[in-house]
Structures are given as C-alpha cells and as structure tokens.
Length: 226
Image (cartoon, rainbow, N blue to C red; front, side, top):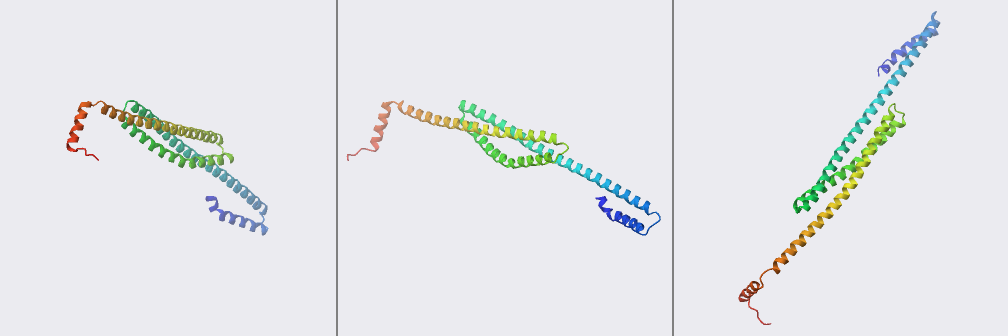
C-alpha cells in the first residue's frame, strides 16, 4: 500500500529530527514537538486506513456470501420446478394407464425415473456447497459483521428452502414408487387379460371344425400302434 511505500521517507524524517535534537539544535523543542505531531498524524492515518480496509474486506465478504446464497437459491428454484414437472409427469402417467395407453405411460415413467436419478446425484453434490455456505455465514456472524442480522436472515432462508427441497425429493421418490407399483400392476393385468382372451378364443371355436382339422392332420400323420 502507499503508506508502506513511504516508510523510508518517514524514517528519514525521524532520523534527521533525532539527529538535530542530539546535536542540541537551538530549536530542539520545536523539532521534538514536530516529530511527535508527525508520529500522531501517521498513527491516525494508519488506523484510518486499517478501519477502511477492514470495512472493505467485510463488504467483499458480504457480497461473496450474498452471491453464493443467490446461486444456491437459483439452483434450488430450478430443482423445485423440475419436481413440479415430474409431478405432472406422474399424473400424466396415471391418466395414460387409465386410458389404456401403457406404452405412453412406460415412456413417461422411464423419463421421470431418469430425471429423479440425476436429481438425486445433484442433491448429494450440492449438499457440500450448502454446508460450506453455512460455515461461511457462521464465520461472518461470529466475527460480529456489521450486517450480521441480514446474514442470519439470509442463511436461515437458504437452509429452510434447502430442507423443504429435500423433503419434496423424499415425497417425490415415494410417489415414483407408487407409480411404479401401479405400472407393474397394469402390466400384469394386461398380460392376464391377453392370456384370458387367447383362451376364450380357443374355447369359442366350433368343435365340428376343430374335429375336421384333427382328421386332416391324422391323414398326413397316421397314428401307429405302439
């Protein structure tokens, strides 16, 4: 800083003044007073600079904290919207099952499962960033930051939103499980219905026609006694 760059100038000034006093200069008293005044002025300047630097440092820390908080909240907002979209997807899947379009339901469900897996990994990765943000906030608060009240309010807001997002994820996971159970049930029902339809078709055939078919088969493949 500029004060440090002028350290040699201040030292030379002190040395000259001290040398004059040692030589019993006729204005030694005035010289001593001037040296004392200069030292006081220098101390005041250094203290003022330090206070200003501390304030600027705290301003920078506050801006960094607010930036990271806003980034975290924007990230959570995007995931909240994603959960809402997937909730709509699950409802759509149930509607597709109810309307006998299982192929569309399967595609919608598989897409929701894939997004949930990606979302779960993203939550785990974000967990460390939220913890670091909380540590940062605690450090600022414990250092008696000039804006600590707003810092407390902001970190509480972030942590509350984070907790709600985690609970929403758990609820979403539960709904996906219910949806998968419904899909499995629908698939099994379709298979059973197809099997029943096949058997009903077989039993509804004309026995006379069926006997004729057997007679034709025996013509080409006669039975031989054992």
